[in-house]
Image (cartoon, rainbow, N blue to C red; front, side):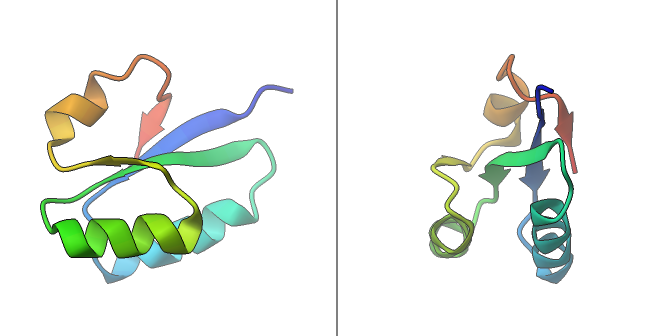
Length: 70
């Protein structure tokens, strides 16, 4: 089964709840995150092993392989 590729825009407190929850969902994969706060973006990306990090949500939304955004 192919996984649904997800992204999170806005790395606030609830983003961590969503990211932890997605780790437990079969068939879902968090592939990208977005925030204008670069240190927070890099910290969160490192914590969850997410290499695709965007500062501009429009750039993230233009990615054809992302299926859904939180």
